[in-house]
Each structure stands twice: as structure tokens, then as C-alpha cells.
Length: 214
Image 1 (cartoon, one colour):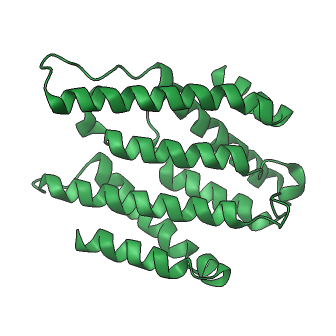
Image 2 (tube, rainbow, N blue to C red):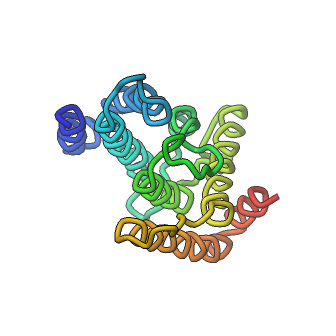
């Protein structure tokens, strides 16, 4: 849609420098908060294209916000100690929380398969590379606890996607159903590889995975 293209254009323009990236955080956070509910419950009477447009806006917004968090890194690849990163992470979880619900057999009641795959990719990157949970990265205890809870719930959602979501039904073996089944299997394989790698990154990553499983 035209609105989704406009949001994508703004994201590309804002990515030109670190200053413009930081300046556009509030805008994309508000856009994500505004359109996430439209993905879950489109306005009554709205066409199917409206939901697809809302998902496109959400996808761009999540990608931009995650990239902002991951770009706060020093030349050696470690996270830059920035207290505001914990607050930004909390804002991201608050906006994404409605999208990270339990699996449902009805795609009309949640994000589409395409959007779930894009969200999973971004969450995996964030869980691997972002270390806002470390005490030196925040100066407020409550912010650290909230960020940790958000990371844990994101990992719980990934676990549910891998182990609790039922495969797409194949009552009618048409091309579309087969393609959905293939994509579902692809996501599950990627997540299984992610879970196997996570404990090898650090003791902290392993503990996070253990808490999420529990």
C-alpha cells in the first residue's frame, strides 16, 4: 500500500546516519504501537488488503527498531553501554507484546505466517547480539528487570512457534497449502538451530534459554 511504502521510504532515509536513526526512534515506536492492533483485529468491514498493509508497516517498523538497538555497538562488536537502550528495549517489547501471543490455528486471529517469520528473524538477531541485560548496560534496576522479562518472553514465543504451533493442514494438497507447510518446516528448522547455538554463546544466553523453557 502507499502508506507502507511511505513508512519504508522514511526508514531508508532515516538510516543514512546514526543521528537520524536515533531521532526517528519515537516515530517508529509509535507507528508500531498504532498498527500492531490492526494486524490482530482489523477494523470491521475493512478489506483483506488493509490487514496486509498493516503487516507491512509493522514489519518495517520492527526491522528499524531492532536495527537501532543492534547498531549501538562499538568497533569491536560489543554493545555500547547505553542506559537508554534498556528503555528502548522496553518500549519495543511493549509495542510488540500483542503480536507475541500463543499459537493459533486461525491465521485470522494473529500475525500471518510471513510476518511471524520476519518477527522470528529479528528476535533471534536481538537475542544473539543485544546484551542490554548486563548490569553495566543500565543504571536503573527496574529497567534491567523489565528488559530481561521482555527478552525471556520473546524467547518463550520462539519456543512456542517451534514446538507448539501445529503444522498447516493439508486436507487439500494444493500448491498454496504445500508452500505454507514448507515455510512452516523451514521456520521450525531455523529455530531449532538457533536454540542449539544459543547456550554456546555465553552462560547468560544459556540461563535465558533455561528460564524460558521453564
